[in-house]
Structures are given as structure tokens and as C-alpha cells.
Length: 138
Image (cartoon, rainbow, N blue to C red; front, side, top):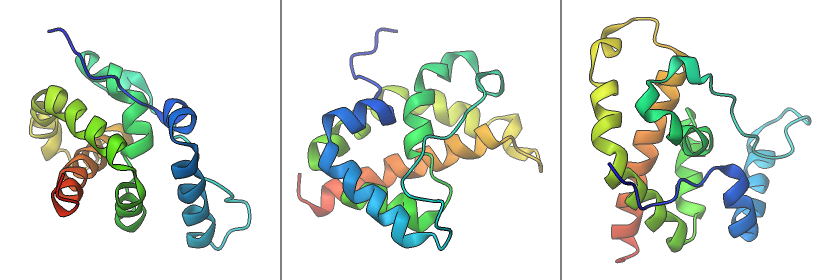
């Protein structure tokens, strides 16, 4: 399958949307009591724990796959409309394959991998992005 939507990871988002990233970093600083947290940092995702067909999504999952509900909502609500459109378009192309993994046998594992949880959070972030676009009437 040919994919037409770019997969934006944290590096690309920082370059393309610096004002957004500044606001995200401020949110992270305000959220964490630990003075060592000064900005959002990209997660480390082990590709060996991700189905091969989904590995291209790792940069996006590393950014949007925030397991903290509040921070994940902030990522979406602070995002410029252009970025949300890219996230929704990306998930339109990949969502079926992601859902196959998330609804497959690993979903019944009581000890899911960190990567599985990250992809779950990513899926939720994409749903939230769609809802946010509806709220913005885009």
C-alpha cells in the first residue's frame, strides 16, 4: 500500500511548529513537580516490540502516545489545526492496521508491552484530534 501522508515525529513537529512545541514544553514544565522535567522528551520505543508493518509509525507514536490522559489532551488541544489535520489523515491511512494489532491477541495479555500501551495512547490521541477538529468546525 502506498502511503501519502507524512509521519511527523517530534523532530519534524519541532521544526514545522516551533510555537506549538514551546507551549507543549511549558505545559510539561507546569505539570511536573520534578525540576528536571523542562520539556517534553521523545519516548524510546523498541521496534522489536512493534509489528513490522507498523514500525514506520514509531516517530509519531513516540510523540502522540502519551499515556497520561491530561497531557495527551493538552498535546491535542494546543496543536494547530494544520497539525491535527495531518494526524487525522495519517491515522485514516494507518488506523485499520493499528486497530488489528490493538484488538488482536496481545490485547488479552495482562502484561502488555510498553509499546502496545504507547500505540493505544496514540490511537486515543488520534481520536481526540478528530474530535478537536469537529469542535473547531474544520
